[in-house]
Length: 256
Image (cartoon, rainbow, N blue to C red; front, top):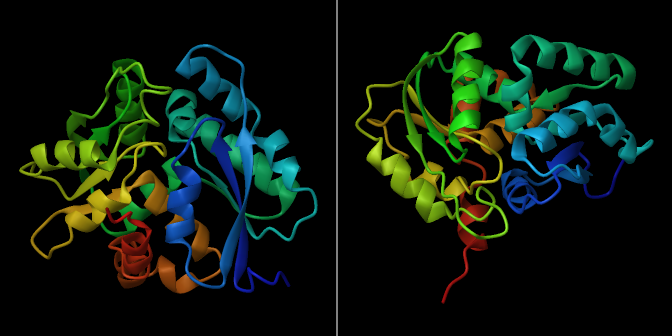
């Protein structure tokens, strides 16, 4: 038993320059759970080439955890899944699970699981990606059987350190608001680098389509390995709407 993870310990795989995954995962973890982080690394210049490296290096990155008592692995990188496709992703996941003996959960597959559980077939995508990667994401969700009704772009080719990781929650909130009239079952905030928890909480309401992100879905699906109640529709809905993490998010916000 691990002192600070008596309910479950998760091995989290994070892209090397991503500044969002660990802070959001910390908020999304209920008491009794903890995670260890390993960085996915690449020296390639383009986003697409780095994502290919992250995918190819998943098994090696898992080895960073050595013999820590990990109960589930969480791959916090959706772009790699889009480029590799549903079938190749499934093969890689199965290979790692066979070798390690524990679930290996990708953010993309976690979102698909959540949408199916909540019977959300028609979706709107809020994308932080450049056009080619956004197009790949549309193909990925369609391959999973979802109808992509509309895509709204939050991409900003700024001169900051990274065009995705430097996006603000306010940017995501604005784009989500602009797409709010779409006739869909769910809004999906893509990527693990764009801050999404505040925008998710802002959409809470009985008359609104469901809103989730790749990060909220990844945390939910990882926790469900240890708590099967989260795989029931009511449990998933309550968690994804912020039922157990809203207060931690609010406490994390800096007050001027």
